[in-house]
Each structure stands twice: as C-alpha cells, then as structure tokens.
Amino acid sequence: SYDLTQPPSMSVSPGQTASISCSGHELGTKYASWYQQRPGQSPVLVIYQDTQRPSGIPERFSGSNSGSTATLTISGAQAMDEAHYYCQAWDSKHVVFGGGTKLTVL
Amino acid sequence: EVQLVESGGGLVQPGRSLRLSCAASGFTFDDYSMHWVRQAPGKGLEWVSGINWNGGNIDYADSLKGRFTISRDNAKNLLFLHMDSLKTEDTAFYYCVKGGGSLTDRTGYSHWGQGTLVTVSS
Image (cartoon, rainbow over all chains, first blue to last red):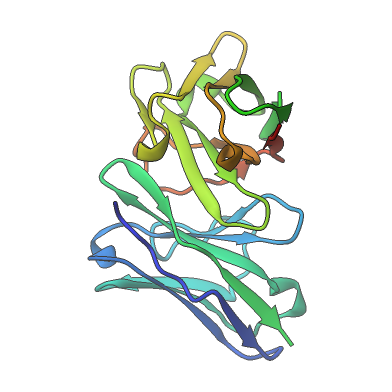
C-alpha cells in the first residue's frame, strides 16, 4: 500500500512561516491536496493539484510538490490557522491521506 | 450552496449491519462522483469508498472490501454506505464527500458533510 508521512506536530509564531511536509514514494509524480481541520469541524480543502488554491482560501496558503515531498506553506501564520492539516494523494485509483500534522500557533 | 447531510449513524453491536445515507443538494448530483471518508475519534482521515456518477465504477479501501457496499440513487440525490459485519475498529465519524467529474478526478474534495458517528460496541 502507498503511504504518506507527515510530522505529527509543529509550532509557529504568529506572523512567521510554517512549512508542513508530506513524503511519499515519487509523490512529485502525483497530484497532492491539503486539508485543514479545526476541532469539531469537517475538513476544508486549502490546496489541490499541488499548488491550486480554492476560492475563499487566503493567499497565505500555498503548496509545492517535487521529488518525494509535497509541502504546504502558510506565510504569516495567524491564530486562526491553528488546526490539523492532512495531505492527500492518489495511488492508482485509491485515495490516500497522510497521518496529519497538528499545527500550533503560539 | 452545496449541502451534504449524513444520517444513519448510531450505536451498533459488533457483527451487526448499518446503512448510512447522505442527502445531497445545491449541485447536479449525477454529474459527480461521491465518496465516503471516515475518521476514528482523535485519529486521522481514512478514505473508505468512492462511486462514479452512475454507479458503474466503484472502489473500496483494500481493508474494507467485502464488508462495505457503496451505492447511490440519482433520482433522489442520495448516497449510501451499507456496512456489514461491523467491528469495533469501524467506530468513526463517517463523512459524505463530493468528488469530481470522474472517480479518479484529481481536483481534491471541496465539499464535506458534517459527518455521522458510528459507534461499534457491545
């Protein structure tokens, strides 16, 4: 089975940049998406097809994907960005999620 | 506005069956694939199953094959997940998710329901 690996947690100071990694075999050859999930809420798509931002998602969210690592970058992190973040990719026709990263803004 | 409303969750004993439903509105239901994603309490996301627009292409997570069945009723804008032989490890929130135009569309999941909790316990 295909696995996506994320750091379990990370922290960032308000206004600084957070970069959350997601690693998988030849991940750069697959499209990656990213989801934000606040406590008690459903996931929200923040990046799709590696770099695309859905309407309504702030410009401080950006994505990249190359080699074996996809990265979600939050530039100028705000308190409201504190949440779990999950990467997602497709292995042939199966959907795979990473284990999630808890981002703390403090 | 896209709305996905799940129902059918609850407490069920191990080995029993349960059927989840998802009522969709705000979009042309039979233009899109649909999926179920689950999340055990305090854990990460796990894709469960997906179905294309007319039910002709269906896929399941390898760990669930044979126990879960996904289906849809396009006339009523409903998505279903029938779960048999439930195990304690199936305890999770089950989310109904709107997919893309095909089952393997790579544009991400932009719309999720609020989830329905299934608890498998004796």
